[in-house]
Image (cartoon, rainbow, N blue to C red; front, side, top):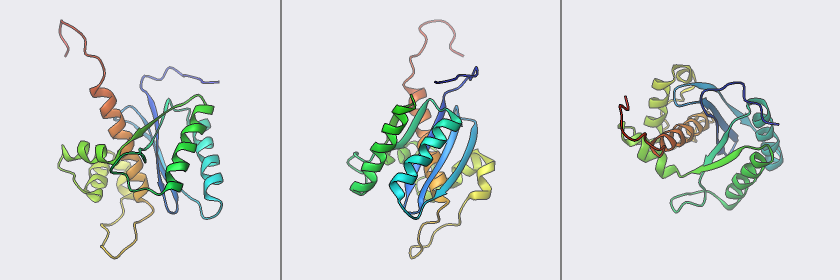
Length: 180
């Protein structure tokens, strides 16, 4: 049963899958980051990921689960990840939570408006916008290095912020009168 404790903003759970598990970020509106973190999963990845997603859905009771759009033409995800993403959306539906897929290309377009064009620049922009994330900002990756597991937190946050911005821009505008 869905409870709404007088929330003023839409609560968003954004998730980014990685090779080591997943990162997540929970927002209440575009300016309030509620929680974030990573889940390190080494064995039985699909089952444990889905269980952890269910736990997050139950704990935070979001209105929407935001994930990467693995079906988008620019997506570079394996079939296993695409399948797991669809399973996560199905778990969300069983909890009464709607799901939304955001293409990574939309994330890059959104952040390019603020001159953040690389994954690292997007992470820095997010750390500047949400100072609590600054402590989790990984160092800039060298070409020969593997991606830092903390990067998935910033990728999840970027999906969430992009979803909220797209939602806000598509909201109907009031007709006539002062819109200030």
